[in-house]
Structures are given as C-alpha cells and as structure tokens.
Length: 396
Length: 109
Image 1 (cartoon, helix red, strand yellow):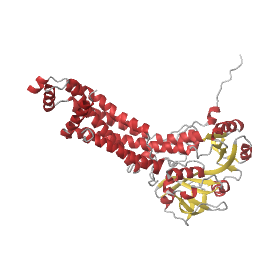
Image 2 (cartoon, helix red, strand yellow):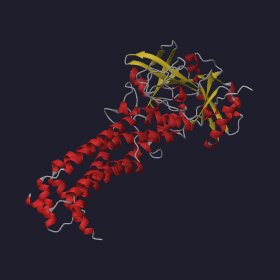
Image 3 (cartoon, chains in turn red, purple):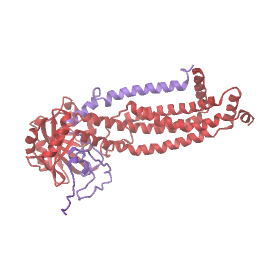
Image 4 (tube, helix red, strand yellow):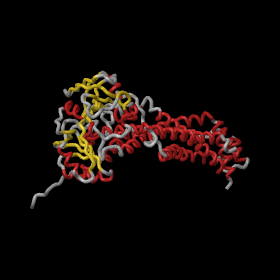
C-alpha cells in the first residue's frame, strides 16, 4: 500500500483549500456555527443529566406523600413508627414544605418554603460550606431562616435582616436571616427559604401531627424498590416516589429544551449541505482546466476523486472540531445570552454556574453528525470532477 | 512534510485544546470526586432531601417535581394550568403508580 501517495493527495487537497479561501470559508463558517449550537446544547444537557445521575446517591431512597381523594395532601406522622418497623428501613425524616406565591417588584413568584427537622437532619460534612455568608442552623433555632441566593438577590436581603413574609394565600411569618446559600448551589436551591420544621408548620397552618412528606432512608439502596412496594401495598392513600423516579424527573425537566435546538440544528445542517452541494457540483473553468492538466500528466480518475473527498473531509473535520470547542467554551461560560432558555429557568433567577459535561460518546456523535453528511454529499461532485475528459477540459 | 501540513497541525491542536478543556471541566464542574461545585450541589440535595429545581413556572400548580403527574394540572378537576411559562410535562415512573388498576366486573348472566 502506497501511503506516500495518499499523503501527497492530502497535501494537495490542503493547498487547494488554501488557494480557494473564499469558497472554503463560505462552507466552514456555517458548519462551525451549527456544530457550536449542537455541542453547547449537548454538553449543557449532559451536565444536568450527569448531575441528576450523581444526585441519585444523595436523594432519600423513598419519599412518601399523602393522598386525599387522589390529590397530594398532608401525611400523618403516625406512619413514621409503622414504616420504621418495616425491614431494611434505617430512618424516616419528616419534612414540611410548600410554595409561597408572592407579588414582588420583579413580578409574580412562588418561592419554596422548606421546613427541615433540624434535630434529625441527614447531611454530610460539605453542607456548612454551601452557606456563603452567615451560618447554618443549630437544632434549637426558631424563627430563623437561610435563603437561597436567588431569593436573597431578588429581595436584596442580607444576613441579619428580618424576612417578613405574607403570601397571596394569607400565610404570614417573620424570620431572621442567618445565612445565604452559595451561588454555585443555586441550580437546586435558587428559590428556597429554609426554616425549622416547626416554623414551617406554623406558617402553613399544618398541625403538629402532619408533614408534607416523609423521607425514608434504607440500609442499602438496592432495597429501596422492595420497601417502596411494601409501603404502597400496606398503606392506603400514599404516594411513593423512589430516588430513581425522582432522578428521571430531573433529567426530563432539563432535557426537554434541547429538542428545540436539535430542530434548529437540523435545519441549519440541511442549509449548509445544500451550500456545499452548490459549491462543489459547480466546477469552474479554472478548476476544470486544472483537473485536465492533472489527468494529462498521469493522475487517475480515482486520485482526483480522492483529493476532492479529502478537501471535503478536511473542511468537515476542521469545522466540526472548531465548532465543538467553541460550543464547549460557550457552555463553560454559562451560555451567556440564552442561559435562561437552555436551563429553563425564569428570568428572576440570576446567573449561576451551569454544569457542563461531555463524554467520548457525545464527541463521537458530534463528529459523526458533522463529518458523515459532508462526506456523503461531496461524493457525487467529486466523481463529477474526476470524470472530466482532460482533452475537453484543457481546450475549454 | 505530512506533519508540517497546516490542516493536520490545526486538527491536532484543536484536539489538544479540547482535551485540556475537558479535563478542566471535569475537575471544576462535573466529577463528584474532584469538583467542589458538584460536592456542594449534592450536599444541598442531601440536606434538603431533594432538588428544589427552579424550573420555569411561577405557578404552584405546574412546578412541583415531586408531584409528577400532577404537573400542569390546575385546581380545576381535569383542567390544565394555562400559565404561559408552564411548558414542562413530566410523567414519573413512580413505583406506586403501577399498582393502580381499573377493572370491569361483568354482570353475572
């Protein structure tokens, strides 16, 4: 196998692209743009999906909610002791939470007020670090709150301020702000107002014997489905959500937006392919003469076709690679300008770091999407150029 | 000569740049083992018992991840939320849902 021949054809193809710069640029620039759009969308979506998968290990194994006539309702704390008796159940933690619809300067919002059982909190050593300013609760705290960064910024609140809350449903409460969560955890806590569980009960007028849901931790995550099935079978009017189901919800919530960009990408790709077809299938007199001379000095039809396909592949690989890197950098920068749409958040939330993830599969897929259609569509024009009759071409 | 060719050098440089970005990103935003950002996000999820994802809606009826199938359903029976921003539909694969059944018991002849 004569490798040097193919190397020389590659070099010749590179020189050709250099000589016909305008034509090369008119093809490569749109290709870079479409690959950048595709890749930043894929990487941003990949980041959220990876995050959701990682989150599975940190979620409660099972969340149990109460149902009343088929609708979500409060759940009785009497169930805690009964659930604790089930095999494989390690601990059960109640949680009281709800939404606080409000009308503030920036518009209508619905912040999440989350009441945590401070005496039985399941947390790891990193949690105190997520508090940007101020401190975390101590179990005895009452009338105090820690705000998500989105809430704090919307209300221009600082540690030490008093949060007076009266929502449009008539619920009232007053809390001293003792901490604000970091910006980098905003993706899961932007609009949250954390308070002790008793304060949440008072705010939402939920009786002492009830909670919004029960978080169940099992001895091993593999036993979660079994325990979930036992709870669902044993207790009427309960809604049982496993960590797996919740993970799927997060993935779907963030994944859906990428569909719009996929449709946009498809339209752009077709446009670029048509452009490439138009550029390649029209052989100018100069190129025609050039091919005639090459054939006259001994080039075979196969060599011309190979060179032409190499020209397209260089453009495709280069355009795709630059597009992927551009998209990756744009995603790392937090997709400025369209982050709200990519992430699916409302405009009230300030910028926060977007998880970005790319793996080998995504890269291979992007190269296949960028290079294969280009190669396919350039085959016919390459054959057309290769089959030129040298005598006819040189004579014009 | 082959290696000195401009286009091949460009492609190799781009791949190298990409690898640098990949490892940087892995360390900063993605990998739980290395990324402080991820560790803190997960710590938040663990402490509050689930993600309080700020997806889109300003409307209480449409934004509750835990409620899954109730998303987009307003307080009116059979109705759907008409909030212009509520366009996320989610159907969870919660365990209990597989237990709900509906059957017809035929009248004895």
